[in-house]
Image 1 (cartoon, rainbow, N blue to C red):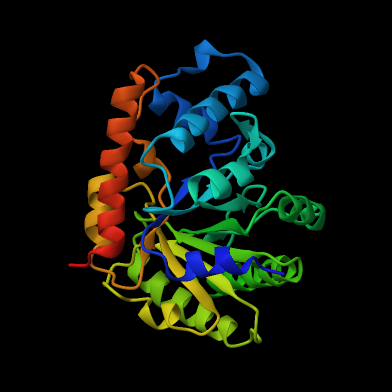
Image 2: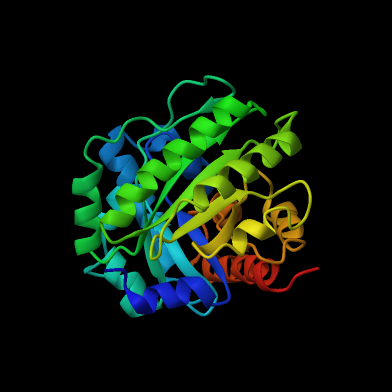
Length: 298
């Protein structure tokens, strides 16, 4: 049921995945960085309208094409929106050559055992079916790891793979995202536990049960290389995790089997006040930098 052309692009095309999936809690901060203060809009509807306008501006930019941007992760409201009168997923794929993904998680539960699991998603199947019908290829879901607690990390990975199987059953490819906080005092130790737990879960997947992995850039370069080479892993991608674009790209460039999937690092230099020419030029420079770090390895 997975679209073969999209799968081939995601598996092998050079480039990176743009994360345009800021949700309700992170949208005000994203807008503030873009130059729109909370005092400049009232209510969620206006907030999300402004956010959609920013995302549409990015998607329409000349540099935002499948030549360097393999895929784009969308917030649910973005999936339901349009660009120039065309639904966003089909606009991305048909007009830009960019594979559309959907953020599906509903946020994080309270921290326990050094981690934050995903909140329950009782309506997930309905969302997955709707996404598939709109042309969505895959999904993304985020958990957070704050410390190297073996039981907590095992719980994160188990939950991620349980939901991944539900997603696979609906004909979509899940991006599993257990983020380790970059300022964790036990980051390296957490990475070892996480790698081993993911490896065990990957070995339980059968033929055709494909996943992607999205992880924090590791402390030791190529630390997740064995996971990237696993038969069930379509692609290994990296989140920027709060690093600046320059720092994230430098660290990413040392990981040969990893490409970027950046959010804040993608948009950090964009401002609402920019002329279209300046906006497009700034975004093109950013895309070139992230692309280079994803394909040219140190």
